[in-house]
Image (tube, rainbow over all chains, first blue to last red; front, side, top):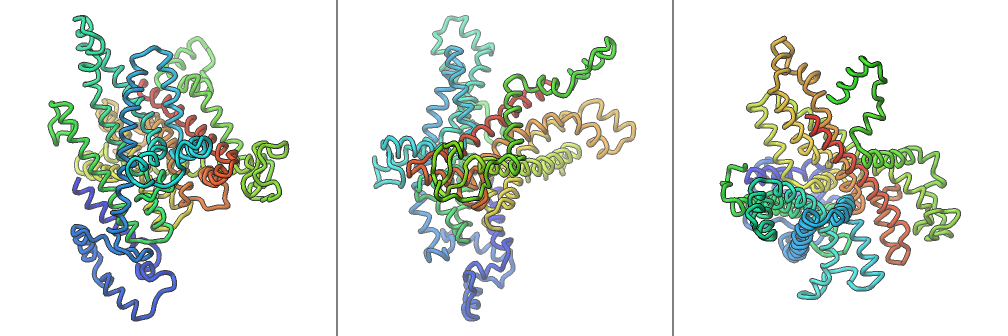
Length: 303
Length: 294
């Protein structure tokens, strides 16, 4: 895990140097600068040092909370990000809750109720899986914000309940595909568990069916569900980039897209690094959750 | 594979016609899969023949007929610049199919080669390759596309390059597992004892036996690649206007939606959903068949 972070940080740092043109040009802008400016920037960014020395200095700065300076906003990247990270985190967590509730419950319904319910849910899930988040976002805005006027179209609102209302549509848009996938996995896992011998034994012993589902089926089915849930939350972090742009939310994702278009490299590096760190951390948390759900799994064995 | 071979053997004995290509396809895809394949083929054909079939030049702006809604002249209406939506859909589908196709082609070739080398050599080579794949796996696909765009600027090719790297581990993981299983089967040791080289066995014996899995995985990934590529275009970081592209059309249609003209966004969004749905159904069916044939 640490290795992954080290390698990605290396790639993220190196990308500035892979880009055509000298790194000086990025800092000074397309018109270049006077020789004094060039000398000052070279000294400031230590462009004369060997590549590896610069990389480790950059890494050291990050550990001290210094992510560099935006050349477009003329601000510290840390300051730029700290205001926006909350929006993205709120969006992703709201969406994750939606996915867990809707995905697991509709998967359970599809597995346990009649064939008819299964067909309806599976069809909706198949369409949901095939729909890109930006299409859902545009559809939700045109129906519920523009058409019916139930929700605001853009922005994050003014905190508290207002923010929750503003984030509802974006969170739904972000959740649809993953909830559909989770419903599918839940259904498959529950169906598989139900044919196992210990469940049949429980049925024969005459236990109430909701007890069987809760204690014998669902508990065992939780392993694949948690795996998918973890992967899902991780991909939500990337999906948030798209959703924030659809709904004009001022989060990390819209900052990243703007920074890419403006070639604001220190911002691009910092945001991508944060996204990857979040991704890796979520995966690590899922690994830890396995040991809670299933005591037979020991940390480190990954089986 | 085994099913059709058995039939061929029986066929020679009773002199029944060998099952044709279409029949074998139906056997693998089932009813739903075949229907999806037919729809996809139709979309692909009208995209490929867009220069001949499209009723209008996709870039020709007829500002007087802008946002006209469906009329006799424009069956799906026109966009904010008065361009014919149907023609733009046909041209846009070219990019929406060809871009992800290229992504999957590149990542499948690279991923399969890496996986087969890893599963054949084993030991340190396997460890090293698996390590690289794990690291690629640890980064969400669209982030690779964004990194690539950040370096080389927004264009279709940079996005394709970034996504191709992102999809390598998905192919490689599945193929490596299949390759490891094949490697321990007796026919491989038999070929080895006959003095065939490792590369020869991998190419002529193992590859044909894992090709079903490779193809199934490639098609399953194609659906995700369509979504990712369209998303990057929607963000304005991929294909640049005025080129017709389905992701871009949803974006420009989005502005018209806010002014009360949803035709462009609906048409482009629906076509993306249709394409991805067909590809996913085919991929699911092929995956199930490839598993059951083992």
